[in-house]
Length: 120
Image (cartoon, rainbow, N blue to C red; front, side, top):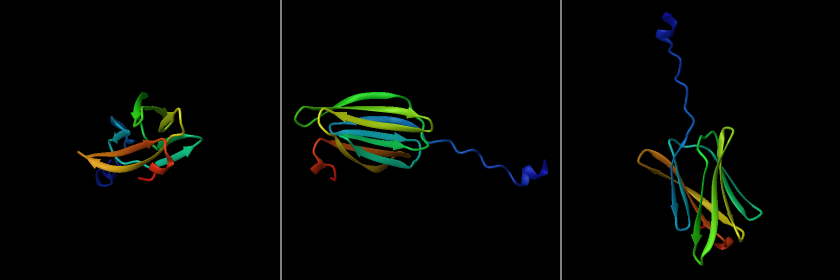
């Protein structure tokens, strides 16, 4: 008992969780309770991010890019991660950048259907 007073056990770390989704004209903003590692994948015309060790709920929507090009997006929880997928009628390219706002860690994801704009 005295050992616990002098050598307290560390509190368990909570996994980051998605606290806000915000659609933009050319993408999606995903804010989490804390930072998390991200894996980026751009294959076969589909762009996706995997937020590792993250919790979140399913969500979906659509953004309309310049030229009336629709791109569907989905948030899919998987085991201990969350996958965000962007699919369009044309191959979809994207990139993301980190942003910190109001004590939240955010990933702003910009989508295009042209590989020339993927590295903005």
